[in-house]
Length: 179
Image 1 (tube, rainbow, N blue to C red):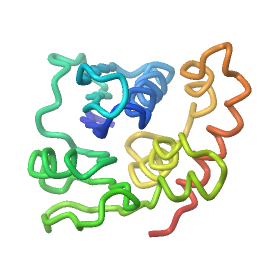
Image 2: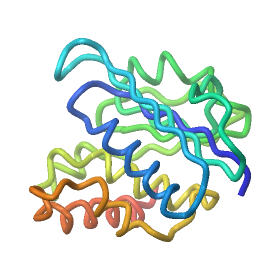
Image 3: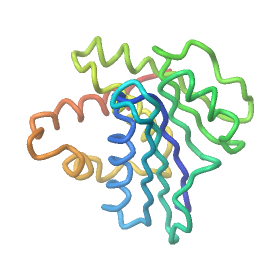
């Protein structure tokens, strides 16, 4: 499988850190080497939030993702800031509800998922992050399609176990999205 460097970026309250932690736990369950490095502004909601995740078959030397293989941009400032950092041949996943411009680069593959709108339309307004994550898992076979339920059980806290089913539904919506 090698190493996959992912950068998830958006603003606070979009579930950036939750989605990154989901990927990290999935990697741990699969017995991979993992790094999860959250970063967020001082504001509780509305400030910047990003998360670097590294999944590897080898020990991870540094938790910093400077050149992501996969970028998940959930707002325009994040796309503007990180688009040029993605490696040639990389993948960029865009929340097309909140970002109306297209990816300018031609040496990457871009996916436009109206995740925020899909979440709202399906009665799960806080789960745009997991809708995009479903699309990421579908389009990035190197991440694997196994151990999803186990990873969800790790990141959904004990007092919110009632949210497991809706998170699973959000992931499924993302996996099924054609676009």
